[in-house]
Length: 136
Image 1 (spheres, rainbow, N blue to C red):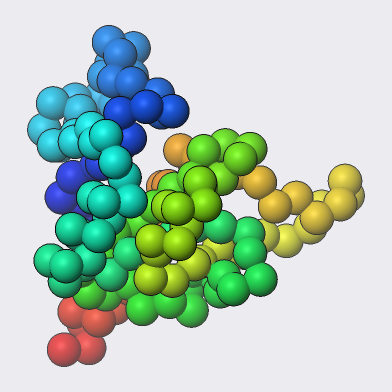
Image 2: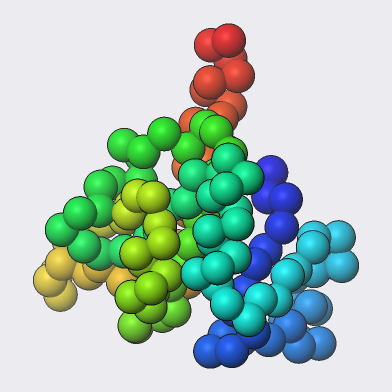
């Protein structure tokens, strides 16, 4: 999906265990995984390098992910399951997006497993970039 690296906070995040590496089917050995102490400071550095930071959140300010322009240099921040992003991390984002979902017979389900949501967000980035490349 064109990912250059995965950045994870050193604290309050799942670590790269042998089980995680195995489940990644080799991607963990080919993809740089960067563990950082201060995510907000890292996001500031990423933004200074010309990368636009999108945060995934259910928020009044968030817009559907397909309505965001994901064709440029992009970082996507995924919050933790259940609690989402921390306040300082959310404030460090340039724009907030969400994955629109239809309701079901049990009400309006608005929560996804973080790995599923990440896959969907990366697919949307890839879809937009593929369309943009075809139009160029």
